[in-house]
Structures are given as structure tokens and as C-alpha cells.
Length: 232
Image (cartoon, rainbow, N blue to C red):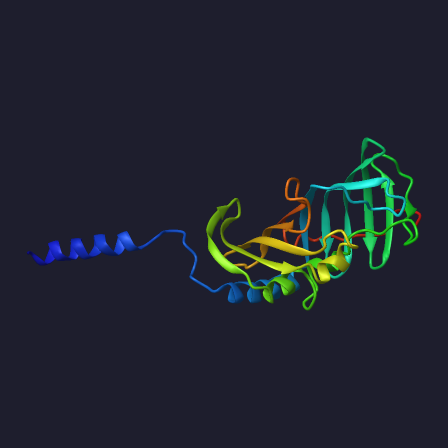
């Protein structure tokens, strides 16, 4: 066969083995170790957290049932957003600002803020996004996860990891709402190794209506400054 023909055959074989857009093959421990480092360096992020399944409550009086939160977190311990709750059969949206250990809330559309004291209730600790030892990425880096594939997200290709673990520090960060043994699905963006999506299923919840937490992260490292509400 002519030399040019052999080159054509060899080129066709090489192209057939190449999958455009595929990420390097890495172990789950490598991916999550890099993710823990990337997330600890993160300055800010936009997040959406949705909860489905059996009810749980934000307040000690058990009147505000959490369903959905959207907002921004700023390293190391600041958060602002909107919380959607069911309260006495009515869907209510609350605005929330948290700085360190202090939290303020207000009804959406109402400029009357009040501080949420521990006696009245507490909210999710934003440090669970960032903490290099006990936050979500660090916890996942020590978990027995496995890579089950690569998937294309809106932001690009991502590693899909899966496994099971105990809630551990997540229970503390989420003020007891995330608890027990969890089945975890995690999507880690190739290149940046930032967590883009996470799904946590509480395995000890009702199998007919399991408690599921869905977290989506975007808009990393935007310049955001979170201040106490005016007058506080």
C-alpha cells in the first residue's frame, strides 16, 4: 500500500480513539483533593439550594418549613439571599443577611429587618462552602466516592462522582437539617475543579418520599460586599 494510504489509515485510527471534549482520567480522590483546594480559594459564589421530601423547620416554634434558598456567599463567613418557606400553609419569602454569627431577616418587599437570635432560630452556616477542614469539599475529599462518568454542564465538562457517607460536619453547618447517612452525587468542573452541582439524599428518610438536597453553584469570584441591613 502506498505510504500516503498508510498515513490516512493511521490518522483515521487515531481520530477514532480521540474523544473531543473529554477530561483527563483522574481518580475520585485526586478530583476531590483539587476541589477542596479550589473551593477554599473561592472568594464568592451564587448558590441555589432546594430541599424536597419530609418537612423540616427553620425556627424553634416549627412554623417555617424550608424549601428553597437562593443567594450569594462570600468567603469566609458572609451570606445574603432569599429563603422560601411554607408558614402556616402559606408560601412566604424571607430575605436574609448573615455576617459571622449574626443573622438578620425581613419579609420580602418589607424594609423592616430584625435580628434572628439563637432562641428564635438559626440558619445555614456559610462556612460549610469554604472551610478547608470541615466544609463540603473537604468532607467529600475524605469520602469513599467513585467516578461514574463525565457529563456536559452549561459551564462545560464535569466529572460525575457518587458514593455514600455520614453527614458529619454537614449536620452542624445545616443546623441539624442534613442528617444521617447520605447518598451523594457530585459534579466537579474540569479545569477549575470547582463544585458545580451536588445532590444529597438522606438514606434514613422515607424511601417513598426521600429527603433530597440539590445545590447548584455559579458566578464564582464576583466582587460582592455584604453589609448589615441599614439601621442594624
